Image (cartoon, one colour):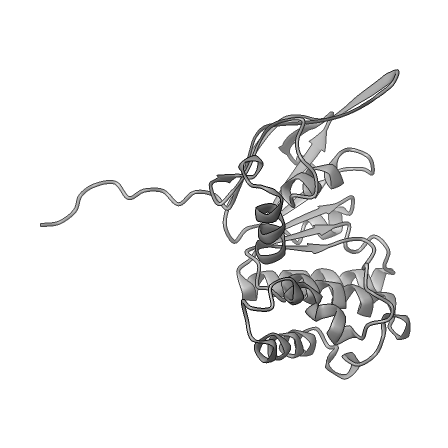
Length: 238
């Protein structure tokens, strides 16, 4: 007998439901995000476009579990993040989400390879160390840093440090990669090289990529562009 029932739709990897974020202090308040609702499709690349201070980084911090909304829900693979305890949040962040920031945040005393492997140390029982090292060396080769793996961050260029940070973000094979102004501190040539690399790694690894940027050039490398305006998320109109 042929099953003619309608297949259950695949839930989005990430969903925002009426998310608000406000900061309040004695004598003042600012509403950064206002009732933001949005679904992020698995495997897509999306740019959050807008000027500095519009709320792009705040939104990424909420998505990436680094902060909590004032109200509303953030759901990751159908799970409301506010239902998780601190341990559950930390485990999800480490295993399921990769981060690339404007500043690389590499440990200066560690080599490139050691920096890349840092996220794997949180759960050493989950994967053998040799497997993690092989993946790290493979990714470093992919981004052109195979011969720099034993160098320290101070011996690298800005572009090389940012590529190292990108490999670190991918080491645990997360389904979601968040990049906050990843080219903001780079010169034009390095920025273009990193943009090419992001697009290539997104395509080859199938991750959902969300990039916050004020650069329209970088945003146009993504499959979709949205913008934050007056605290709301809306389609980008050139």
